[in-house]
Amino acid sequence: MGAQWGQLAKYRNIVTFRLSPYELKPFAGAFSVGLPNTIRRIRGQFFRVTPPFVVAYLVYDWATAENERLSRKNPKDYENDV
Image 1 (tube, rainbow, N blue to C red):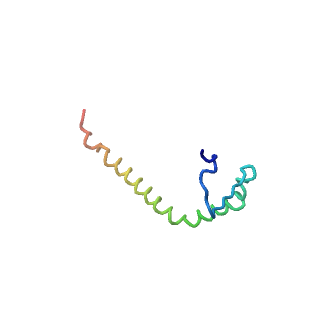
Image 2 (image 1 turned 90 degrees about the vertical axis):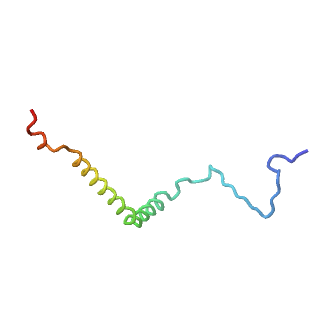
């Protein structure tokens, strides 16, 4: 009554290729091509990414130190307490 599974629709002018997972090399070129490419990309983006993080860290460090300084009590206010 119906078509067999896998033959439910007909496509014209479409070519499909499949590779066996046993014939693939998943790490082909990972160290000879991938690692140098990663280093090149990091070097290319270093001066775009690093300055905002450095500025943000300096602002955070300054704000934390300033908060600690302002939160401290003045010891001279308590000199005469018994």
